[in-house]
Length: 68
Image 1 (cartoon, rainbow, N blue to C red):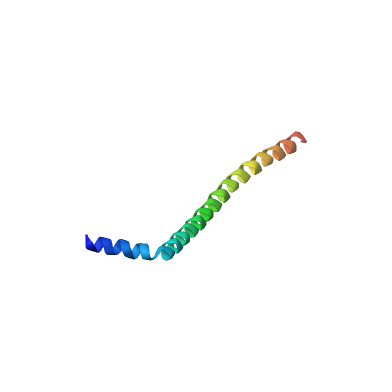
Image 2 (cartoon, rainbow, N blue to C red):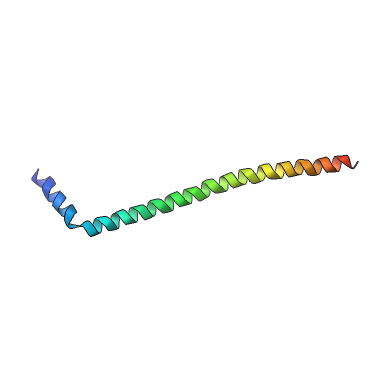
């Protein structure tokens, strides 16, 4: 139990270090989440663009067929 008390004292004595570690962990987590969000967003955008281009290509083909 004395070991745990000493550990807790050490942790309390280093509040600035703890806050720095928490801020760094938060910053890194935010960056990872942001990066992941971009990757997911790009994936959705690619899917949407492919769908839009397919619709446009169908319309262009229909115009081409109607002029024959």
